[in-house]
Image 1 (cartoon, helix red, strand yellow):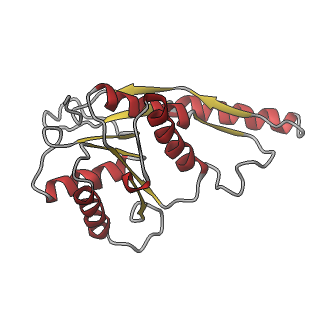
Image 2 (spheres, rainbow, N blue to C red):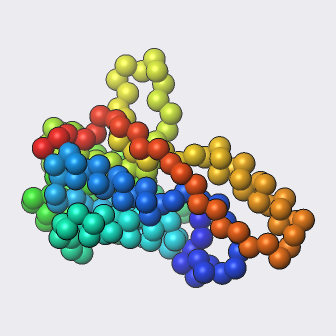
Amino acid sequence: MLNRQMANLPICSVQTDNFNATKELTKYLFKKGHKKIGLVTSDSQVTTIDERVNGFLSSHIDEGIVVNQTQILSTIDSVVPNSTRDISEDIQAISEFIQRNKDMTAILSTEYNIALLAKSAVELLEKSIPNDFSIVCFDHPPINIFDINAFTFTHIQQDQMSIGNRAVQLLLDKIANPALIKKISLGYSLIEGQSVHRI
């Protein structure tokens, strides 16, 4: 991941197509009947977050659905490395965000740990997922097939193995040709879980 100051520098990178992945995840919610969707993200200064926010906004434009700033909560900090913010503060912030957006029926979180916080916030309001509220996210830890009570969020699965392999190859190419500047964007998969309810 690159921070915003480094995004346009002439350096090599390998990453997921975050913009289109977020568009697809948002449009998945639209197809399930959700019209008022919230976006919950961290305050991290990386281009990945910007691309996901832009994909979220672009999907609304494509569908002709009005979206405004009140639908975006970008102050989640407890998931950021070395944060001193207590998890309960972020759960409370998401709970208040949901209460301010009374007609919101779904949340797109930019990472798995934020989805867990959002799930806790929904439960704090004595509601359940997916019956009362839907949540989708990026990434998800592997599920143990022997855990019959495992809960899976509908999510974007990045191809971590390919990212690693391509990054190593790109590094070798860069060593052989120091002038090389190459940015690689890789695909992804949308994995359906148990966290989305059709309206």
